[in-house]
Image (cartoon, rainbow, N blue to C red; front, side, top):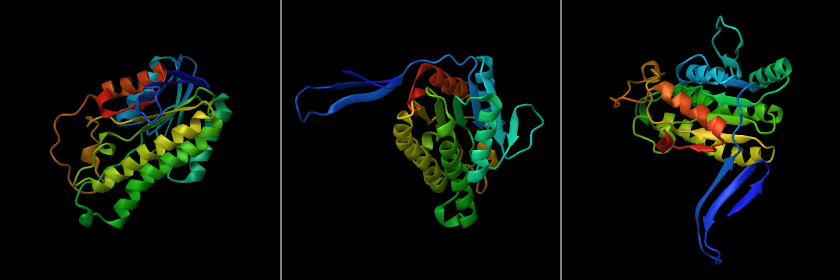
Length: 248
């Protein structure tokens, strides 16, 4: 069964009799040409974000990056997106400068390790401010400015599918992103905007070595971040609406 929802198509597999359950239901948007699109990538100067930027630019997208760091490069805005006003200012600046905003990717993130009882309130606050609140503030600011057919990507990681001891608070901050994206995506559809939550498995970005607190456990060798970045950009271009860990 197919039902048109704006520029999206809902595909469902179900029986016709009342009371039977839906076997599969997902949203598929039309593929988009990334050439000439304008993208804002938060956390676009490191880890996966930098590679997402490179991949988008290779496909003809004009990309503006933002992070807390001042970077000596063109098309970069230094801003602390943990502050709602800063998120609004960055989005407004991009929209005013280029006349449109088509894609927003949030690749920001910090991590901490250790038992819950060993984690300080300051670390808890920083995890949620950077991983969760900044994402919400960025999405809230971006939605009114995004073009119809626009895309928002949040990266919550596999930890949002199964939290782990020693990473409980970090996992909670990322699970909150996944939960937010699920509901935000339904709201954004009303404006013709697609929301993708990406949950790649452990990826060799070096983030674990820069933890706010604690020592990382011994992880198996992770994915190549270039492959993860390409998969995310493919999803943007191909009309996908969710990237679970099994999609990588």
